[in-house]
Image 1: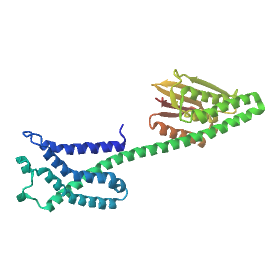
Image 2: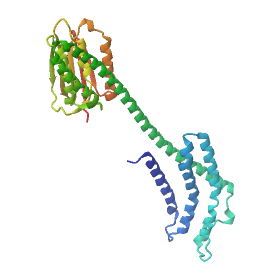
Image 3: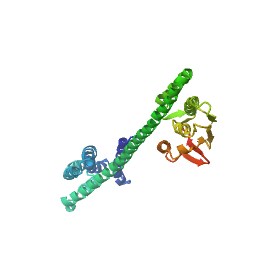
Amino acid sequence: MLTTKKGENAIYLLIWLIVLGFPLLNIRSDLSFNWTKLWIDWIRIVPFIILFAINNFWIAPSYLFKKRIQYWILISVAIILITFCADFTKIFRDLLVMDPMNPDEQLREMRPSPHHDPSILPRMFDRIIFSYLIIGFNIAIKMMFKRQEDEKNNEKLQKMHLQTELAFLRQQVSPHFFMNTLNNIHALIDLDSKQAQDAVIKLSKMMRYLLEDSKQGISTVREEFDFLNSYIDLMKIRYPERVKINLEFNIPNPERKIHSLLFISLVENAFKYGINPNEGSLIEIQALIVNEKLQFTVKNGIFSEHLNNNQTRVGIENLKKQLTLIYESNYNLELIENNNTFQAQLTIPFEK
Protein backbone atom coordinates (compact mmCIF):
# COMPACT_ATOMS: atom_id res chain seq x y z
CA MET A 1 0.00 0.00 0.00
CA LEU A 2 1.37 3.40 -1.04
CA THR A 3 2.14 5.97 1.60
CA THR A 4 0.49 9.39 1.32
CA LYS A 5 3.64 11.03 -0.08
CA LYS A 6 4.33 8.25 -2.58
CA GLY A 7 0.71 8.28 -3.72
CA GLU A 8 0.82 12.05 -4.25
CA ASN A 9 4.06 11.84 -6.26
CA ALA A 10 2.66 8.98 -8.34
CA ILE A 11 -0.29 11.18 -9.36
CA TYR A 12 2.04 14.03 -10.36
CA LEU A 13 4.23 11.69 -12.40
CA LEU A 14 1.21 10.26 -14.23
CA ILE A 15 -0.19 13.72 -15.02
CA TRP A 16 3.10 15.04 -16.41
CA LEU A 17 3.61 11.91 -18.49
CA ILE A 18 0.18 12.54 -20.03
CA VAL A 19 1.04 16.22 -20.66
CA LEU A 20 4.34 15.25 -22.31
CA GLY A 21 2.47 12.71 -24.40
CA PHE A 22 0.07 15.25 -25.92
CA PRO A 23 2.60 16.52 -28.52
CA LEU A 24 2.76 13.01 -29.93
CA LEU A 25 -0.92 13.32 -30.88
CA ASN A 26 -0.26 16.50 -32.89
CA ILE A 27 2.28 14.91 -35.22
CA ARG A 28 0.58 14.17 -38.54
CA SER A 29 0.50 10.50 -39.33
CA ASP A 30 1.07 11.02 -43.09
CA LEU A 31 4.64 12.17 -42.51
CA SER A 32 7.65 10.39 -41.09
CA PHE A 33 8.12 10.82 -37.35
CA ASN A 34 9.36 14.37 -36.74
CA TRP A 35 11.58 14.50 -33.68
CA THR A 36 12.32 18.19 -34.21
CA LYS A 37 8.69 19.25 -33.78
CA LEU A 38 8.35 16.95 -30.79
CA TRP A 39 11.39 18.50 -29.08
CA ILE A 40 10.09 22.01 -29.79
CA ASP A 41 6.78 21.20 -28.11
CA TRP A 42 8.54 19.64 -25.14
CA ILE A 43 10.80 22.70 -24.74
CA ARG A 44 7.67 24.88 -24.49
CA ILE A 45 6.50 22.73 -21.55
CA VAL A 46 9.81 22.81 -19.63
CA PRO A 47 9.26 26.21 -17.89
CA PHE A 48 5.95 25.01 -16.47
CA ILE A 49 7.56 21.80 -15.21
CA ILE A 50 10.21 23.91 -13.47
CA LEU A 51 7.47 26.10 -11.94
CA PHE A 52 5.63 23.02 -10.71
CA ALA A 53 8.83 21.59 -9.19
CA ILE A 54 9.63 24.86 -7.39
CA ASN A 55 6.13 25.01 -5.93
CA ASN A 56 5.74 21.33 -5.13
CA PHE A 57 9.14 20.67 -3.54
CA TRP A 58 10.04 24.04 -1.98
CA ILE A 59 7.43 26.80 -1.70
CA ALA A 60 4.33 24.70 -0.90
CA PRO A 61 5.92 22.44 1.77
CA SER A 62 7.46 25.45 3.53
CA TYR A 63 4.65 28.02 3.31
CA LEU A 64 1.32 26.70 1.94
CA PHE A 65 -0.18 25.44 5.22
CA LYS A 66 1.85 27.66 7.53
CA LYS A 67 2.28 31.16 6.05
CA ARG A 68 -0.39 31.76 3.42
CA ILE A 69 0.48 35.40 2.60
CA GLN A 70 4.18 34.64 2.14
CA TYR A 71 3.23 31.63 0.01
CA TRP A 72 1.19 33.64 -2.50
CA ILE A 73 3.84 36.36 -2.68
CA LEU A 74 6.58 33.81 -3.42
CA ILE A 75 4.53 31.81 -5.92
CA SER A 76 3.48 35.00 -7.75
CA VAL A 77 7.13 36.07 -8.02
CA ALA A 78 8.05 32.59 -9.28
CA ILE A 79 5.27 32.69 -11.90
CA ILE A 80 6.39 36.10 -13.20
CA LEU A 81 10.03 34.99 -13.42
CA ILE A 82 9.14 31.76 -15.17
CA THR A 83 6.89 33.68 -17.57
CA PHE A 84 9.76 35.97 -18.58
CA CYS A 85 12.22 33.09 -18.78
CA ALA A 86 9.84 31.16 -21.03
CA ASP A 87 10.75 33.51 -23.89
CA PHE A 88 14.34 32.27 -23.73
CA THR A 89 13.17 28.82 -24.78
CA LYS A 90 12.57 30.39 -28.20
CA ILE A 91 16.37 30.41 -28.65
CA PHE A 92 16.52 26.62 -28.30
CA ARG A 93 13.48 26.18 -30.56
CA ASP A 94 15.09 28.32 -33.27
CA LEU A 95 18.31 26.32 -33.01
CA LEU A 96 16.35 23.15 -33.68
CA VAL A 97 14.45 24.66 -36.61
CA MET A 98 17.38 26.39 -38.29
CA ASP A 99 19.11 23.91 -40.54
CA PRO A 100 20.55 25.56 -43.71
CA MET A 101 21.62 22.15 -45.04
CA ASN A 102 18.04 20.91 -44.91
CA PRO A 103 15.50 22.84 -46.98
CA ASP A 104 12.65 20.70 -45.69
CA GLU A 105 9.35 22.60 -46.12
CA GLN A 106 7.96 21.32 -42.83
CA LEU A 107 10.85 22.89 -40.87
CA ARG A 108 10.26 26.25 -42.58
CA GLU A 109 6.59 26.05 -41.63
CA MET A 110 7.56 25.64 -38.00
CA ARG A 111 9.50 28.95 -37.98
CA PRO A 112 7.34 31.86 -36.72
CA SER A 113 6.19 34.15 -39.52
CA PRO A 114 7.30 37.77 -39.16
CA HIS A 115 3.80 38.90 -40.21
CA HIS A 116 2.14 36.89 -37.41
CA ASP A 117 4.47 37.49 -34.47
CA PRO A 118 2.15 37.95 -31.47
CA SER A 119 2.73 40.72 -28.95
CA ILE A 120 4.64 39.81 -25.81
CA LEU A 121 1.85 40.95 -23.46
CA PRO A 122 -0.82 38.46 -24.67
CA ARG A 123 1.78 35.71 -24.58
CA MET A 124 2.72 36.58 -21.00
CA PHE A 125 -0.93 36.83 -19.97
CA ASP A 126 -1.65 33.36 -21.36
CA ARG A 127 1.40 31.91 -19.61
CA ILE A 128 0.47 33.51 -16.28
CA ILE A 129 -3.08 32.13 -16.48
CA PHE A 130 -1.74 28.67 -17.39
CA SER A 131 0.83 28.89 -14.58
CA TYR A 132 -1.85 29.69 -11.98
CA LEU A 133 -3.93 26.76 -13.27
CA ILE A 134 -0.95 24.44 -12.74
CA ILE A 135 -0.36 25.83 -9.23
CA GLY A 136 -4.07 25.57 -8.40
CA PHE A 137 -4.16 21.96 -9.53
CA ASN A 138 -1.03 21.23 -7.48
CA ILE A 139 -2.59 22.86 -4.40
CA ALA A 140 -5.85 20.93 -4.85
CA ILE A 141 -4.01 17.59 -4.87
CA LYS A 142 -1.91 18.58 -1.86
CA MET A 143 -4.99 19.64 0.11
CA MET A 144 -6.74 16.37 -0.77
CA PHE A 145 -3.85 14.29 0.55
CA LYS A 146 -3.40 16.55 3.58
CA ARG A 147 -7.07 16.09 4.45
CA GLN A 148 -6.64 12.32 4.24
CA GLU A 149 -3.53 12.50 6.41
CA ASP A 150 -5.31 14.73 8.96
CA GLU A 151 -8.21 12.29 9.12
CA LYS A 152 -5.81 9.41 9.79
CA ASN A 153 -4.05 11.40 12.49
CA ASN A 154 -7.37 12.33 14.07
CA GLU A 155 -8.40 8.68 14.08
CA LYS A 156 -5.13 7.75 15.79
CA LEU A 157 -5.57 10.50 18.40
CA GLN A 158 -9.17 9.48 19.00
CA LYS A 159 -8.15 5.85 19.36
CA MET A 160 -5.41 6.81 21.83
CA HIS A 161 -7.93 8.90 23.79
CA LEU A 162 -10.41 6.03 23.91
CA GLN A 163 -7.70 3.60 25.02
CA THR A 164 -6.63 6.01 27.77
CA GLU A 165 -10.21 6.47 28.93
CA LEU A 166 -10.83 2.73 28.84
CA ALA A 167 -7.64 2.06 30.83
CA PHE A 168 -8.81 4.61 33.41
CA LEU A 169 -12.18 2.88 33.73
CA ARG A 170 -10.54 -0.54 34.03
CA GLN A 171 -8.25 0.77 36.78
CA GLN A 172 -11.33 1.88 38.69
CA VAL A 173 -12.42 -1.76 38.88
CA SER A 174 -9.18 -3.11 40.35
CA PRO A 175 -8.80 -1.03 43.57
CA HIS A 176 -12.48 -1.51 44.42
CA PHE A 177 -12.18 -5.25 43.86
CA PHE A 178 -8.96 -5.64 45.87
CA MET A 179 -10.38 -3.71 48.81
CA ASN A 180 -13.36 -6.05 49.06
CA THR A 181 -11.22 -9.17 48.67
CA LEU A 182 -8.66 -8.08 51.27
CA ASN A 183 -11.50 -7.44 53.71
CA ASN A 184 -12.67 -11.01 53.13
CA ILE A 185 -9.19 -12.44 53.77
CA HIS A 186 -8.80 -10.28 56.88
CA ALA A 187 -11.99 -11.79 58.28
CA LEU A 188 -10.61 -15.31 57.65
CA ILE A 189 -7.26 -14.90 59.45
CA ASP A 190 -8.66 -15.33 62.95
CA LEU A 191 -11.25 -17.94 61.93
CA ASP A 192 -9.21 -20.32 59.76
CA SER A 193 -5.57 -19.58 58.96
CA LYS A 194 -5.39 -22.43 56.41
CA GLN A 195 -8.31 -21.03 54.46
CA ALA A 196 -6.73 -17.58 54.71
CA GLN A 197 -3.52 -18.94 53.18
CA ASP A 198 -5.49 -20.57 50.36
CA ALA A 199 -7.31 -17.29 49.86
CA VAL A 200 -4.04 -15.39 49.56
CA ILE A 201 -2.86 -17.84 46.88
CA LYS A 202 -6.10 -17.35 44.95
CA LEU A 203 -5.77 -13.60 45.32
CA SER A 204 -2.19 -13.68 43.99
CA LYS A 205 -3.37 -15.57 40.90
CA MET A 206 -6.12 -13.02 40.41
CA MET A 207 -3.62 -10.17 40.77
CA ARG A 208 -1.40 -11.78 38.15
CA TYR A 209 -4.38 -11.93 35.81
CA LEU A 210 -5.27 -8.30 36.46
CA LEU A 211 -1.72 -7.00 36.14
CA GLU A 212 -0.36 -9.22 33.36
CA ASP A 213 -2.70 -11.53 31.50
CA SER A 214 -5.52 -9.03 30.97
CA LYS A 215 -3.44 -5.86 30.50
CA GLN A 216 -4.02 -5.97 26.73
CA GLY A 217 -7.76 -5.99 27.34
CA ILE A 218 -8.26 -9.33 25.55
CA SER A 219 -8.40 -12.75 27.20
CA THR A 220 -9.78 -16.20 26.49
CA VAL A 221 -13.14 -17.22 27.94
CA ARG A 222 -11.34 -19.85 30.03
CA GLU A 223 -8.98 -17.26 31.57
CA GLU A 224 -11.80 -14.86 32.32
CA PHE A 225 -13.99 -17.51 33.92
CA ASP A 226 -11.05 -18.87 35.95
CA PHE A 227 -10.70 -15.36 37.32
CA LEU A 228 -14.41 -15.18 38.14
CA ASN A 229 -14.35 -18.63 39.75
CA SER A 230 -11.46 -17.56 41.99
CA TYR A 231 -13.39 -14.51 43.07
CA ILE A 232 -16.53 -16.55 43.74
CA ASP A 233 -14.50 -19.09 45.77
CA LEU A 234 -13.22 -16.26 47.96
CA MET A 235 -16.75 -15.01 48.48
CA LYS A 236 -17.96 -18.52 49.35
CA ILE A 237 -15.45 -18.61 52.19
CA ARG A 238 -16.97 -15.45 53.63
CA TYR A 239 -20.56 -16.69 53.25
CA PRO A 240 -20.28 -20.49 53.67
CA GLU A 241 -23.84 -21.21 54.77
CA ARG A 242 -26.06 -18.22 54.23
CA VAL A 243 -25.50 -17.87 50.50
CA LYS A 244 -26.31 -20.39 47.80
CA ILE A 245 -24.48 -19.91 44.50
CA ASN A 246 -25.58 -21.60 41.29
CA LEU A 247 -22.98 -21.50 38.50
CA GLU A 248 -23.51 -22.57 34.90
CA PHE A 249 -20.64 -21.80 32.55
CA ASN A 250 -21.59 -23.63 29.36
CA ILE A 251 -19.09 -22.51 26.70
CA PRO A 252 -18.09 -25.26 24.21
CA ASN A 253 -14.92 -23.52 23.02
CA PRO A 254 -13.34 -21.76 26.03
CA GLU A 255 -10.31 -20.61 24.02
CA ARG A 256 -12.34 -18.02 22.12
CA LYS A 257 -11.33 -14.43 22.77
CA ILE A 258 -13.32 -11.76 24.60
CA HIS A 259 -12.62 -8.41 26.22
CA SER A 260 -11.59 -8.98 29.80
CA LEU A 261 -12.96 -7.68 33.12
CA LEU A 262 -16.44 -6.89 31.87
CA PHE A 263 -18.29 -9.40 34.08
CA ILE A 264 -16.60 -8.82 37.44
CA SER A 265 -18.64 -5.67 38.18
CA LEU A 266 -21.91 -7.60 37.80
CA VAL A 267 -20.67 -10.43 40.04
CA GLU A 268 -19.37 -7.96 42.64
CA ASN A 269 -22.70 -6.16 42.76
CA ALA A 270 -24.53 -9.45 43.26
CA PHE A 271 -22.41 -10.33 46.31
CA LYS A 272 -22.27 -6.82 47.74
CA TYR A 273 -25.89 -5.78 47.31
CA GLY A 274 -27.79 -9.05 46.76
CA ILE A 275 -27.12 -10.73 50.12
CA ASN A 276 -29.29 -10.48 53.22
CA PRO A 277 -27.10 -10.94 56.33
CA ASN A 278 -30.06 -12.22 58.34
CA GLU A 279 -31.36 -14.92 56.01
CA GLY A 280 -30.33 -17.15 53.13
CA SER A 281 -29.68 -15.61 49.74
CA LEU A 282 -29.41 -16.98 46.23
CA ILE A 283 -27.07 -15.84 43.48
CA GLU A 284 -27.34 -17.39 40.00
CA ILE A 285 -24.61 -16.89 37.42
CA GLN A 286 -24.93 -18.28 33.91
CA ALA A 287 -22.88 -18.03 30.72
CA LEU A 288 -24.20 -19.32 27.40
CA ILE A 289 -23.62 -18.88 23.68
CA VAL A 290 -26.65 -17.30 22.02
CA ASN A 291 -26.57 -16.50 18.30
CA GLU A 292 -22.78 -16.81 18.28
CA LYS A 293 -22.46 -14.27 21.08
CA LEU A 294 -21.57 -14.69 24.75
CA GLN A 295 -24.52 -14.09 27.06
CA PHE A 296 -23.63 -13.57 30.72
CA THR A 297 -26.45 -13.40 33.27
CA VAL A 298 -26.33 -12.62 37.00
CA LYS A 299 -29.47 -12.89 39.12
CA ASN A 300 -29.80 -12.03 42.81
CA GLY A 301 -32.30 -10.83 45.38
CA ILE A 302 -33.09 -7.19 46.21
CA PHE A 303 -33.21 -6.01 49.80
CA SER A 304 -34.65 -2.73 50.99
CA GLU A 305 -31.42 -1.39 52.47
CA HIS A 306 -29.73 -1.71 49.02
CA LEU A 307 -32.41 -0.02 46.95
CA ASN A 308 -31.29 3.11 45.08
CA ASN A 309 -27.69 2.55 46.19
CA ASN A 310 -25.45 5.18 44.57
CA GLN A 311 -22.41 2.89 44.50
CA THR A 312 -24.39 0.31 42.54
CA ARG A 313 -25.33 2.90 39.95
CA VAL A 314 -21.71 4.11 39.71
CA GLY A 315 -20.49 0.56 39.03
CA ILE A 316 -23.13 0.01 36.34
CA GLU A 317 -22.40 3.38 34.71
CA ASN A 318 -18.68 2.53 34.71
CA LEU A 319 -19.47 -0.76 32.96
CA LYS A 320 -21.70 0.98 30.40
CA LYS A 321 -18.92 3.42 29.54
CA GLN A 322 -16.48 0.57 29.00
CA LEU A 323 -18.94 -1.29 26.79
CA THR A 324 -19.63 1.79 24.70
CA LEU A 325 -15.92 2.49 24.22
CA ILE A 326 -15.22 -1.11 23.21
CA TYR A 327 -18.29 -2.13 21.21
CA GLU A 328 -20.08 1.18 20.46
CA SER A 329 -23.63 -0.19 19.97
CA ASN A 330 -22.69 -3.80 19.27
CA TYR A 331 -23.63 -5.12 22.71
CA ASN A 332 -26.72 -5.54 24.86
CA LEU A 333 -27.01 -4.87 28.59
CA GLU A 334 -30.39 -5.53 30.22
CA LEU A 335 -31.06 -4.61 33.85
CA ILE A 336 -34.37 -5.99 35.14
CA GLU A 337 -35.96 -5.54 38.58
CA ASN A 338 -38.96 -7.76 39.29
CA ASN A 339 -40.47 -9.22 42.47
CA ASN A 340 -37.52 -8.28 44.68
CA THR A 341 -35.16 -9.82 42.13
CA PHE A 342 -32.48 -8.06 40.15
CA GLN A 343 -31.15 -9.53 36.91
CA ALA A 344 -28.28 -8.21 34.83
CA GLN A 345 -27.78 -9.77 31.40
CA LEU A 346 -24.83 -8.78 29.23
CA THR A 347 -24.43 -10.03 25.64
CA ILE A 348 -21.16 -9.34 23.81
CA PRO A 349 -19.57 -10.62 20.59
CA PHE A 350 -16.46 -12.79 20.54
CA GLU A 351 -13.25 -11.26 19.25
CA LYS A 352 -11.86 -12.44 15.94
